[in-house]
Image (cartoon, rainbow, N blue to C red):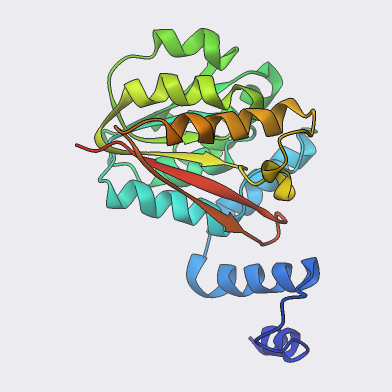
Length: 235
């Protein structure tokens, strides 16, 4: 614990000039104290890197947040768009009861292969079904209602993902959309970046809907400056 106290001494509490080194140190402190991720999560990150996948999975703090959301909702069915190496998938699947189910949609066959191995090694493979292919092609075949939906795929298609998943979320369920701040670029309507445009459009769409309740949260941490949006489906 001493190293974390030492890291904090160089920064006044009221300072706004925080840097990535500080964010990393704070995340490390939280991971050691309250998150307490098991060794299976380090193993997933190592296998994901060894498989050549990009290091863009959620952090341990963010993964534990998804776990808590699932527990609070008493989730039995979870839908994820964007599997990568299965890191966030494992956190959410770990929150499910023995008869729970998680469906995760992954575009890249190699990513899906790595994820399947990781999920099996983490002991949650029996609860997870990985659907390979474009999410917009697969979503029409997804049936039933879900307690929790996590959208963490290509941002340009977020408006379409949101429209589809609202219909698949049970009344009282929750949709979590990741990476919505885009390093602050979300405020700029003229970036020419399709991913930023997708995030902006999703929030415009949410603003026009009276049947949903939403908020967006900015975050900093080892994943940099970003944020997420929560969409509650009243019921």
